[in-house]
Length: 418
Ligand code: PMP
Image 1 (cartoon, rainbow, N blue to C red):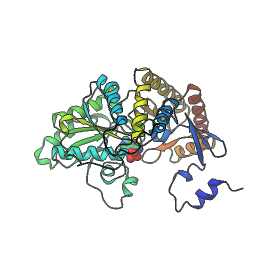
Image 2 (cartoon, protein in one colour):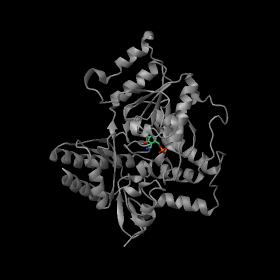
Image 3 (cartoon, rainbow, N blue to C red):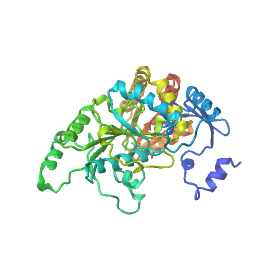
Image 4 (cartoon, helix red, strand yellow):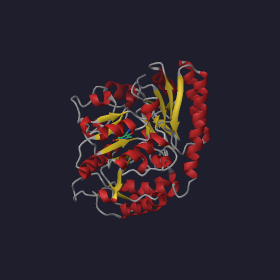
């Protein structure tokens, strides 16, 4: 018999571009780490909205805050006006996240998505410095609009624009080279050589762990080297924490492990907490040279997101228990993945916190693992330039039992393809 998914989605594949091809199910509801399809089958979600659901689906505390707000006719669309919901979020974010970390940033709402905050960061860096170029890294992912795409390394994604993008200079990410190319000496030399023809860039944009790029982890020393170089040469350091922020790697900001203070930080995905669109651009106060309305947008102030964002910060970030739990769960994934790497030829692992990757040397194997996982009702995605990595981004709120259940499915799938 034809199911709903066969008919509506398969039939209309030519009209509707979506996940329906890889994940042939029609989902109806979600709670915690689980999605339920229209036939009542449950799927364990190790993808968590590509990092937008660090606190799981419909977390009860966040849901209650949202329902209460809606019941009281709270403002849903407020442009970027001052509202109570916005003020309360800003106060909480300041007191609970920024101040205890000694971070003194201005906060801007650049639009609803990760791409929007990246665009704002790039624009600001260029305007502040009066310079044009932005340095990005091999395998970086920063978004799909022209500016954000121009600093995205993935050739396939870049091809989506059809014609060449704004020219940028990609630098090798940590671990791209071995040995002496690993530090920034070569780059500094080119920067200082007036005859090199190398234009001093406005900024450098970097992910501390590349998510889409294949769970590539930058070492703390490498990040410090980059931050020092930027400081010495008056180049703005932008950390794109859209995917690795909000506790994904353990601490609220992924750059905390390196003890660096970026000039500009981008946040989105899980900052709203409930899967509703929200993005923040944080920048050094003295960088605020924008005239009013030089960067605006209709959907900048998503008030329901402010409500859930505030509730999430209050609930999860008032002490360090959540960070510790995340690190412990991440260590457990790493342990299981290390066992799998030792057991199976051509399999290795890398990651930080609850962003972990299982890397398959043989082409197509990671995709097969994800397909087998789906057949066993576990949602995972591949990442990396040739989709060679199974990327795990479970909700940080996942229980230990759920985590073991998902890891078992992955272990079986890995054995099947190896
Ligand atoms: N930056 C990073 C590091 C990301 O991982 C993503 C999304 N995967 C983006 C930016 C773009 O975010 P969005 O899809 O919300 O536009």
